[in-house]
Image (cartoon, rainbow, N blue to C red; front, side):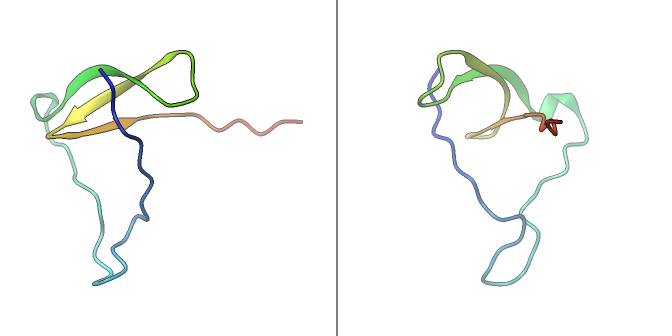
Length: 62
């Protein structure tokens, strides 16, 4: 499965409305893996409608 990766601000610039959807049930999404350009490994993700979302953890280096 290939998915394009996009980054967007949390709020719409046009009307300053939040750009998020609160999932209330696991049935609203599907677990999957996506291949990100320039990455050798696939990433765990969820599919919501026709969009794919992946999660990552930021670790502060010492």
